[in-house]
Each structure stands twice: as structure tokens, then as C-alpha cells.
Length: 263
Image (tube, rainbow, N blue to C red; front, top):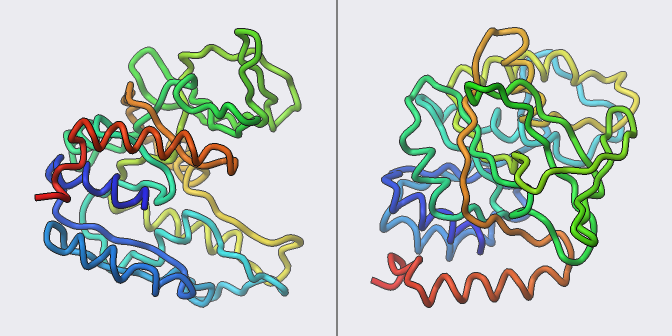
């Protein structure tokens, strides 16, 4: 799995523990993965469950889908005492991202960002979080841009908040949900859950980690440092992307990037 490739890089960068957050119905898929990794890492498996909520939270009627990435982190709260690195299990981030993350000070929130040109698909439009960054490399906001495509040397997309069509710089910094966060982010997630999870919510709810980080910046006077990885990011947005992902992983394997797992 892509998660195993990521964790191989994490181990090489000095990480000793991994918390894997998963839905109950997929837990059985983890057995061979955990068996391979326990030689190198202390593995904790946490279940993201709709019933795991702060007291006084009431789910809206008909809510059946997971509550989002912030809630996933809340479900692992009992195993979090220190700063943490957070990734999506179905993206590949490359070696440099984990090296950068491992050097972040324990109390400093950070985002490992990627250049837009390294996150596109050849098979259709993608949605990305466009980072607004100060001269001091501090994150000020993440702007959601949808249907990003590269055609005839131009990269274009549409800003969600106002519908504006934009031409984008290929080197623009993009969030791919690779975070380094201190443990006190959990209390802010709790506040967001208490604020948003109500029985009267009109639509199915999702609470996303980038939105919580935005609250962290805006209302808690916290700076989030943006560090740039020049590695390729890849994932499978479209079925046709899988061929390219397999080719990239084969090339990296031949170069010895994942030799740890063959010792």
C-alpha cells in the first residue's frame, strides 16, 4: 500500500511510532501491514467511529459517512501526548517530506507543501488547497481550488469561495494534508465538534483538519510554518493514474528507496 511506502520513509527519518486511524469495516485489511511494520515501529490502530464524540454532541439524522479528517484525529486522542506528523494513507509523499517534518521543533506547527506542478493528473482536473504564505514562510490561509488542469502550457482552476477562474503558477505551494501539529490541536478539534455536530445540522457533516488549522491561525494567534518538499507527490485520483503510480514506485524501488523492507 502507499501507506507502507510512506512509513518506510518515516522509519528512515527516525520515527518510532505510528497511529493508524481506520474505519472498523476495513480493519481486517491491516493485519499483513502491521505484521510487516512492527519490526520497526510501535503500531497503534484506532477506529474512527461515529459514536466517538465529545459529550453533548448529537449526530444529525441520517449521518452515516465518516465525520472527516479532524474527527479521525480526535478518535486517536488517547494515544497522542506529543507533537505528531499527520498524513493521508492513500497519498505518496516522498522521502524529503518526512526528513523535513522530523526536524520541526515539537511545539511548532508546520505544513509540508508541494509545488503545484508535482501534484497534477494527466487524466483530468484535480482539487487542491492553494497556500497563502507570508515572506517569513508562515501560512495565512488555504484557498480551495477545484478542477485544476494543465493544458497548452497553462494551469487553470476555479476558486470555490467565489467561483473565480484562475491561472495558476506551476510553482505555487499546495497543501496535500501533510501536517506537523502539537497535541493541543485536539482541544480545538473538540471545540469544533461541539460547535458543529448537532442533531439539527441540515446536511451530512464533515470536519476537515485544514479548517481546524485555519481556526488555530486566526483565533489562537499561532504561526504555522510552511516547508516545501521538491519531491514528487502522487496518488490515484483517476483509475488511469494507477499506471503512472505503479511505474513511479517501480522506479523508486529499483533505486533502492525502500530497501529497508528487503533487509
